[in-house]
Amino acid sequence: MLAVLVKSALRSGWAKPCVRVRPAAHIPERTLAHQEGLPKLPVPPLKQTCERYLAALEPLVSREELDHTRALVEEFLRGGVGERLQRGLERRARKTDNWLSEWWMQAAYLDCRMPVAVYTSPGVVLPRMRFQDRQGQMRFAAKLIAGVLDFKSLIDRDALPVEHLSGKPLCMDQYHQILSSCRVPGPKRDTVVNHTLGKAPPTHITVVHNFQFFVLEVYGSDGAPLTVDQLQVQLEKIWNSSLQTNKEPVGILTSQHRNTWGKAYNHLIKDKTNKESVRSIQKSIFTVCLDAPMPRVSEDVYLSRVAAQILHGGGARWNSGNRWFDKTLQFIVGEDGTCGLVYEHAPAEGPPIVYLIDHVVKYMQRTETLPSPMIPLAMPQKLRFNITPEVKRDIEKAKQNMNMMVHDLDVKVLAFAHFGKNVPKQHEMSPDAFVQTALQLAYFRIYSSCCSTYESASLRMFRYGRTDVIRSTTTDSLNFIRGMEDPSRPNAERLALLQKTIQTHKDNTYDAIHGQAIDRHLLGLKMLSIEDLTSMPEIFMDTSFAVAQHYNLFTSQVGSRTDCVMCVGPMVPDGYGVCYNPMEEHVNIAITAFNSCEDTNAARFARAVEDALLDMRALLGGQ
Ligand code: COA
Image (cartoon, rainbow, N blue to C red; front, side, top):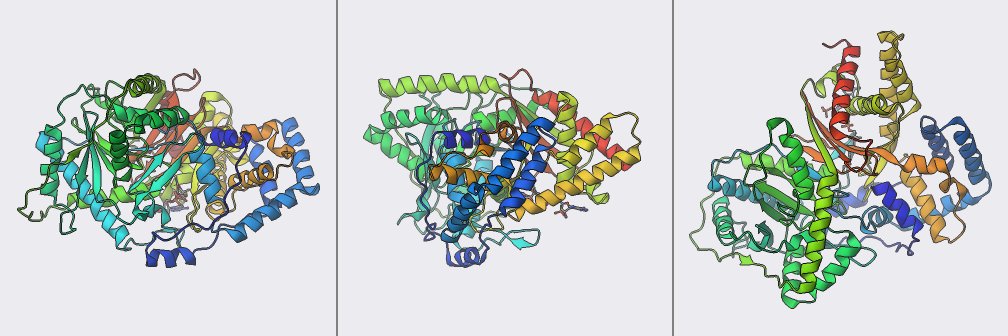
């Protein structure tokens, strides 16, 4: 959805961006010093971006369209408009810590009016847990909470090891944005409020069970985190005092279109008690959703069902009201063993989230238990909501909308078990490029054409860097596909085409993570032309530009040590969202589409991906 939304934000006009240096007060000293040592995001050379843009269009548009666009690009370069905008961007880059990050945060997230559930919030599916009983579930949730608090202490103590990519240190700012933060709906633009900034940082989490929210204080009077045993006792108290299943699912309001939720939010917080309850949720360090069991399904669709539950909660009848979708981090622990998390995307990308998960999973494997102090703990506070007729109407509308979203989302999780990163690596190929090439082949086999493809690339080598795009559809990938689909071509020739495609993808990845991709640069040039209130350069009004921005394949690799997989909704109504986690000997792949589009089908695409991966391995000489 991002590109569509960025475009609509751009079309709808743009308030003057505040070119401010980011406040760093909440960032501890060591991280701050590290941040300041990071390079600034460069503005790529204009001519380079224009040339790469034309090259990216080659496999996507007709020769006539490409000729037309080439003429527009020439005009953009020669007529002075491009140079003027480029100089503006370079000025902005000198004056700010990162010329892109604030624009990106607003255009991709905060101005986006679509619901965060399904459309922008990614989920992470963790392996199924087999709880023997309620105590088992509560113990698991308690350990999980303790693990997250342990991770928090690393952030608070400024002790998180700096991550690296391609040997370069990465920006660690996102770790300071994911806890104690929450999105807040606004009439036209949302905000994200980070409560670690306040004088008294929060010491509680929120727990939700049967649509009822509780404040759980997770630090004792001595400031130490509660032990696993203490947390378990507190969770059991919560469970026992929220057994009624007829409560209004007030949390479902957060799943609405943002304008609708913005209005409903004002209705809700008119009441003082409601306002205080909402504030407690927003301020909490994170949320734990103790979900009701979902209808049983067969093993082969279990992971797909869980992915859907993680993304939307399963509908108004099930767990969609057992969420506060604006909350940055929500861990889900279902009575039936469902396990995962959903996160609001504005403050961070997937890799820091799964890094946190890796830490928590490792923490949970520890066997030692700390002795618990004997002091009895107070009952966790239940958050009250007064449901006025107006709020009740809003909840009913939100339920209907959620049920439509649930019916529309098509999800398939493919646990590809034949091989993992090991096979491409043995053949000196990048596993990421290998999977991306398989996605290209799979798509072509279904649609007899290729499409614009978005693969997220990290810009965290730069201060406050977020992402850019690796465009996986290239002239080389199309040549490879044609080679694969032409029965007269020998395998040796196909292998050479595959190797070339993979090398091109690797080169494009290198460029993207080093700040030399084209998408964010083009976005910046377009933003500036809107700000300048001059007429929009024709290259941005061209059909080719629309084609290039219509990402039928919206993909991301989010690798982790834990056997999990991230999932996201598609970016466009007729597209697929594809996330994958290549493990050493298998690959977890989550595919989403919309049922309202007749042309897409997640399970069919998953089968095509599986075949493509196997056919590509056969080329390498594997079994
Ligand atoms: N021969 C042998 N091994 C190779 C190889 C080759 N030619 N090329 C790569 N490898 C190895 C790597 O050394 C690495 O080894 P490891 O498993 O021991 O670490 C492994 O294969 C993976 O490399 P590769 O598949 O090339 O991917 P990557 O780890 O470099 O990741 C991106 C590529 C694009 C995913 C990464 O750069 C990135 O940007 N990630 C962030 C994505 C993101 O932010 N998503 C947002 C989601 S919300």
